[in-house]
Image 1: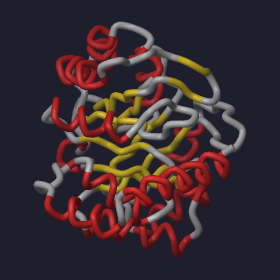
Image 2: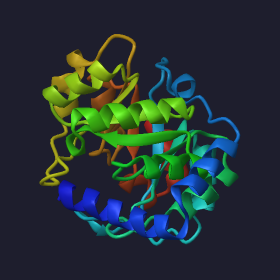
Image 3: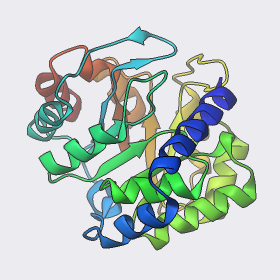
Length: 256
C-alpha cells in the first residue's frame, strides 16, 4: 500500500509539473515569507500538544467527512487550542489537495504541515510554494540517500521535517539524520494495521532533544493520556476531530 501511495503521489506531481515547471515552483517557493518555526511551537511543555489534521478519507476507513471548507475547520482547530495543522494533500485515497493547504495557510497563524507521500524535490518546493511550514517524510518510503536529500532540502527552505517512523530501525535512521521532530505512526502503512503500544516500545530510542510525536490511534482523551504517559510531547490527530466536535475534542485532549 505504501509503495502504491508513493508511486501515485509522484505520478500526480508529474502531472502538475507538466503544467507548472520546477523552475516556476522553485521561484514561488523562494518568494514566500519565511516559514514559521514549528520546533519552537511544538517544543515539549507541561501540557501535551496537538497537531490537528484535515482529513476527508483514508484507505483504511473510507470516507470520514466532506470538509467543504478546510479553512473553517482549521480556524476551529486553532480556537480549540491546536499547536499546528496537518493538511493531507494526497488526492486519490485521502481526498486532499494543495489548494486545501493554501486555504488553511491563509486562515490560521499556526504552523501548517504538508502531509503527503513525499519522495521528490518537486513536491518539497510545492509545499513551500503553498505555504507549508513542515513537510512529512516517511522513512519506510525512502532509501537513505533520498531521505537525506529531501531532509536537507526541507531544512534549506526554512521548513521543519516531520520524520515518520514505524520501527526501531526506522527511528535510528531518523536519529542519524539529526531529525529534531520525529513521529511514530501506530498505523503500519504497508498493512494499515494499528499498534497503539508501538510508541511506548520505541520511546527510549528517540535521540536527546528530539520532539516526540505519536501518530494515529487517537479516538479519546484516554488515548492521548496513554501516549502522554509513554513520553509523547505531541499527538497528531485526524479522524477523531473530523468526525466529532473539533473544539470540544481538542479541549478534552489538551486537558490530559
